[in-house]
Every structure is written in structure tokens, then in C-alpha cells.
Image: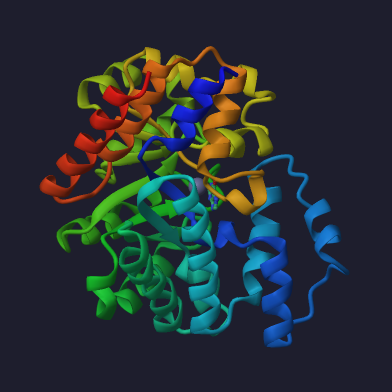
Length: 339
Ligand code: HPA
Ligand code: ZN
């Protein structure tokens, strides 16, 4: 790739809107936390663990991802994991982050909700103090678990309502359509929470439609299956519903065979408000800039597309209007200076 375009991608101000904090846990940190907590891992070494990261689909990844998260026990564990991610994001010129976390992965092991959110939230505060990076939390419900457990998780979360801005839906997509959680999302909506859901990653375009119609989500996570349905594409363009696309994730989980086949360019050229994100960077081979570089290497994306991706990332963020406008001005200032 042209060195100027590479520089633009690396240096441009950007927001990350689709990052599972448990997916930022690097093998080295998994081993360090296992040692600190006396947890015995079923892998002999960092290398052995990393070599298990050969996924064939979403479920094959989730099995290892939940196993990795089992080393997280204390508030400092959640803090250290989050701070390590935020430092990498800062290096990538990420100015604003909206972080997913999966409380059920931890509360099911006896870790208190307060421990989970306390450590993650404290790291976000430190990133704001150190780097002026803004951030917020989105609590995800695990869709393979029953509706009643999502309701129970929401009850656990309510004492910490001031520490998260929204809810999402993740884990095994096929066979667990968004409408399984219609009542939970209705309650969250009544509480004034922002709403997002994973849809159309491995599942069909229909799941994107029901996430919009039944859950009333404001953004779709992944959503790459939308091109199967022209009426849905027309709707996403008209409403400017953002898609949080994760290119390296899609390749690692075999949603597309090769980056050259990825539909990011087609989504942008159709007028969809696509953004680029890292999903689970420790498992999929790279943080936000690595995702941008991999997509721009493989596809005939241009500086104009880079500009739109930077703009889309802030436009789709759940930020107060004045803060959003300030970030969008930063993007325009950056692109007016750069060649
Ligand atoms: N899809 C669904 N659930 C997830 C993912 C994903 O890409 N990453 C972490 N949980
Ligand atoms: Zn995801």
C-alpha cells in the first residue's frame, strides 16, 4: 500500500465501537493472570495457547474465548486487561471507545458483577485522565442463554446503571435470533439505555431486520449479511444505521474466505454507514489499525473511504452532541491538512 495512505489510516482520529474487552486478553496476560490467581490452564505455554487459535466458525472461537476469560477473578484483573487494551487503542489514535463486556461469563463463575464493572470502569477513567480518551461501556447479554438469565443480569446491573450506557447481544448467533430478547430489550429501552445487537455475522439478513424491528437497536454489530437483502440495504442507507464491521474477525471466523472477498468496500459504496473495528483483537490478529491496514491492503479502498470511516466512527458513537461535533471537527481538520 501507498505509504501516505498507510500513514493516514494509522494517524487519523477514530472511534472504536465494537470491541469485546474479554477478547483483548492476550495469551501472555492469560498466563500471567493464571499464575497470579493460581488457575491451572489446559495449555502448557503461551505458544501452545496461541496455536489453538485456528477457528473454523464463531462457535469454535467462543469455546476458547470463554476458557481464556476464566483467569479473570479480581477487580485488578479486569483493570489490567482493560488498561492493556486502552494503551493499544491509544497507540492506534483511537480517541473514543465503546467497550462491550459479558458479565454472564464471569457471574456464572462466582465473580461479582461489581468486580467486573469496577475494574473495567476504573481503567476507562484512567484513560480519560492520562490521554483525554473518552469511553463508555455496553453490557452484552449472551444470546445462547435463556431470556430469564438476561433479565437476572439486568437486575444485577441496575445498581451500576451510571457506569454503562447501553446493552448489546452477543455469543452464538445461529438459532438464537434477536427476537428471543424482545422483552429484555423493551425493558432496557424503557430504562433509557442505548441498544445494539450482533446480527448478520454468521446468521441471515433476517436477523438484522428483526434486531431493528423487534429490539429497536440503534446500530448493528457486524451486519455484513445485509447485502443478501436489497430492501434491507435500502433501509440501512435511508436510516443511516451504522454497521460495526470487523474485517480480521470475519476472516478468522470464516465469514469470508479471504480479505479480497470481504464486502466492506461494497457496503461503503452502497452508502451504508460502515465502521471498522477489532472485535476480539487478541484472538483475531490485530487491533484497530491492523484491521484498517488489512482491509485497505486487500481491497481497492481509497483515502476518501478512510475519511468516511473516520467520520462514520464518530457519527455512530453514543456521544453527547457537542463532544461528537468536536471529534468530527478533529477528523475534518486532520483530512484538510493531510495530502
Ligand atoms: N460474535 C458473537 N459473539 C462474540 C463475538 C463475535 O464476534 N466476539 C465475542 N463474542
Ligand atoms: Zn463482536
